[in-house]
Length: 113
Image (cartoon, rainbow, N blue to C red; front, side, top):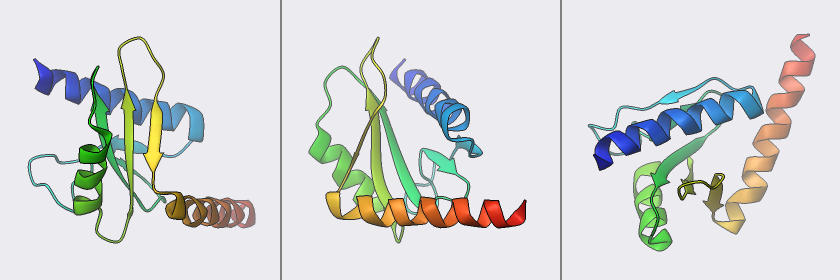
């Protein structure tokens, strides 16, 4: 049951990304583990998403997993409990890097139109 709950959460979070950020997002290939298999892949963002939908989360263990698997991407844990919204956890030093990437992508999109 928890495996199916995880799949549903990954699809739900990918849809949230598409609906709210406009980026294409989809589930990754979880059978591999490592840098090429984040839970959710978002086009044009160097983020490794680790998605958790649990009532009790050991956030530090989840972040350690994201860091281990992220490679050169920014490790982010997307998590929520039942009947709550999504929360994102990332290292403070990665926030600036992510903001710069988003601004650069927005500039590229403006130049293309």
